[in-house]
Image 1 (tube, rainbow, N blue to C red):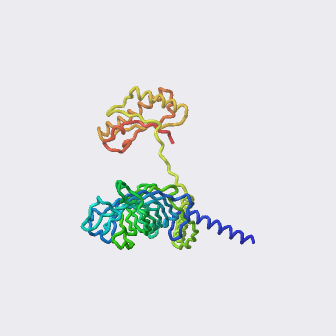
Image 2: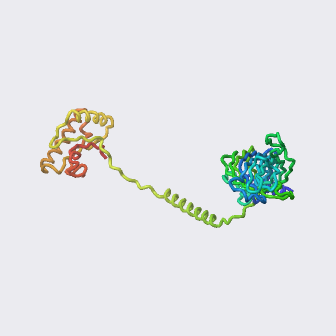
Image 3: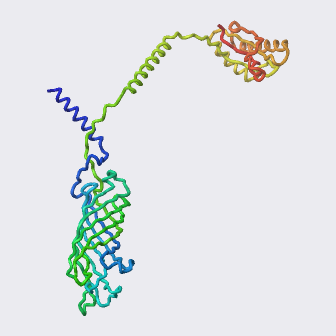
Length: 393
């Protein structure tokens, strides 16, 4: 029982993690319907229309266009399906053999009377977003293509034919039903605003064209431009579907891990060998307690060197140790005899000065060296003219 509970809890945690990670909408998984107050819109549009009835071809094309306008309120129930309802106005022009929706002041086109009416209708459409249907829902998409199918009921208003009415627009006692279909090309200006081009074809009952007055269904083609404002909420939430990932092939990673472990073991071995290696002791030569330098050919001490030797004498007396004084001269100038004499004179002068400062003579061992102090060549001859004071072994 305990094992089953643990297994169930593990599955729940796994599914919860997978569900929380699934945040990208996926059209193949379907869509959740948003709340009723979400995804509403309002649309306004204006354009022109042209009717295709029996005798209209007798009229110039430029004179057949009439104004058209619409106002809608709608809602998208999903990124693909929506509806809208509203009002549509159509100005209709046609030609007829009888003077029905005309007046005595209208001119004719040949033997036909010009007819002109205004159609005011209540309409509704079912809308399908083709872009979201075929290409999948994407919130940042700029262009959307939609089609719609609908119907409407129109009331006709025409010029009065009665005398004394001043050609006023009056109810024409003509009721029209209509079927319609269209194509909307919408461009998102922002999250809330769309501009669009709407191409629509509507059916209408033709105005009376002949004396026989046979009712006939004709078509009216319209083109609109308009703007749509989308209310919050404007986006959609896809359902969260837990997806169990396939078990990956980890052999390559496992091989890399084994190689890394082998490398670590080798480095640990090298480190241990390094730690176990005996430390080689290096004897470092003793550094001089001080070095007194001389100009070329000189062995006398300046006041500065005397002050230096005074301080050195204090250190020697306190230490009680023995010191070796070595006189040096460069081998790049002068003769051997002169250089030997300079070495001896320099070291003797330093020894005398230290004894004057109270250093016992027994602590001092004066000697000379015929080599060069630095062996740095002629460029450093000034460093070879010196007396060094080193603590004795």
